[in-house]
Length: 95
Length: 390
Image (cartoon, rainbow over all chains, first blue to last red):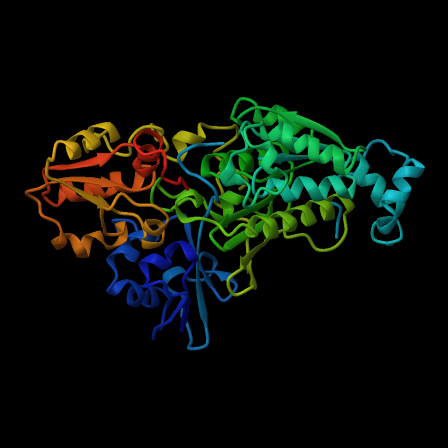
């Protein structure tokens, strides 16, 4: 399946916009993606291994929270989008 | 579509001059006289007169929105001009509100501008929102985004949302009665420092233009009550590939602000919620800092100081202090290039990334590492004024 990497996370994924991984579930796909990439893993999962609350996963155009979350089955032609929250502008000086 | 906004209480007649001005609207059956009068009666509040707020304000003014509120407390600077098209070179140093109000009046004198020179906060948001029909979120930080969302939900005003990063953007319409809100999509903000800001990551100048025009379009559609608004849909824009994708958003039944078992019934402390405390100061208190003057003095005395630059190579090309370049991301695997017995001064652009780098090195066992306070910007201000700043 194809995983789309958003711009803010590309520095942690060899600057790639998408990767193809073999997987049966959403969880497996993420595991394969982050297996050799601890920095990317840190951005997607908290220390206790839970997906971070500001990162959303969409299988095709549907939020996996409303499917079977990480256990959602995936097929070869599916696309998994990682959609993190972005604020724009600066973080350190509030408006 | 069903009307999201109620019918305006008063019908405002158009003058002959306005009829001529809006003729291309008036001959469209989707707008016509009735729609143009709705626009004239509409009161839209735009939070921020920056990258997103510029096109929003310019287009809403041109379209004939009767009352345009603007919230901003910033001053125009040179780095704004690459994308904040409502401000001009001559406006540098002026309040963004003054500059924006002047442009709006020049485009359309029939618009009443209501400037609010204030930082939107939990104390003033609800009172401000009460006087408007809908809110356009053109802010640039997480605390204000959550504040705008919650205040919109609590006051029943649609939140026309967009945000941008480098060449990617997101847009949606939140906080309508039937649709999801920003918290349904993202219950919590990222911890500070994990997601880079535009000031660190940059932004393609046209991107806020693209997204701001989408916001203005949605705002006008909501006022007119036509078409399919971006409710329950998240539009993703990638300017690099010029692909527009759309994701389905649902109202989260567990949403703490708009769900049936809501726990947030009044505005909270958003700086605290987003974990931003003491961000004005140095990123870490554990890492010692060095002032530019001290570093200059050490170098002049011939002391052995190793300068480490943790910016990106393209930043190094703009300006550098001749330091050894290892971008922050590469530091963990290139640490062997450093000698822990030497004095190391780490710097970046303004001191944030180098603070993280210095902390990382300290944890890795480096004892003689200091962070250059204020980065190369402070050096350019105080030591070598011939250097460019970016």
